Image 1 (cartoon, rainbow, N blue to C red):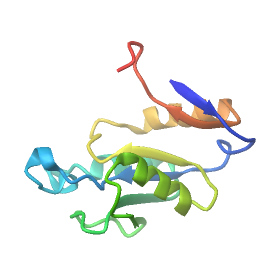
Image 2 (image 1 turned 90 degrees about the vertical axis):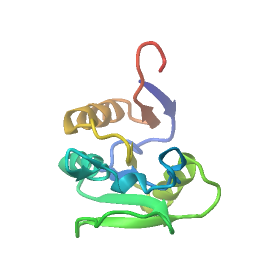
Image 3 (image 1 turned 60 degrees about the vertical axis):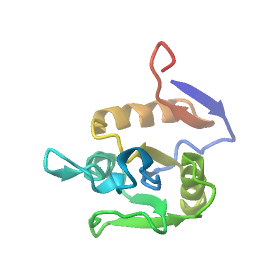
Image 4 (image 1 turned 120 degrees about the vertical axis):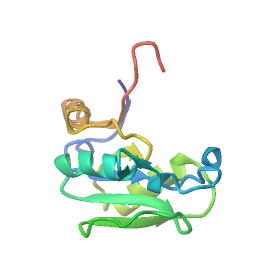
Length: 142
């Protein structure tokens, strides 16, 4: 896990759970990645479910033209700028929309993410008061 230093209290507030779903899905022939089914559920359902277990508020960040399956009533859709097309665009947009709270970000294509992993990331962020970001990684840097 890596972190970046920041001012006091940023990690201590309750974060907004955010799923990034603004990709073009070019490797899938331009199909909406969020709607692709895995075990009978759209990919988008998996990270939303995990985030809803640990965050009081969950939002999906996507391009205006991104095709998404129906969202649960409690999950907001935040349309990010059309350009540039990069995950950092979605993260920046989520930070702007989060009203000063932190964000806990997952990608739409993370069906194996679970609440325990997300809680571990939050615990690390809370233990490192002042961390701007806590990023999951593997011991070999992948």
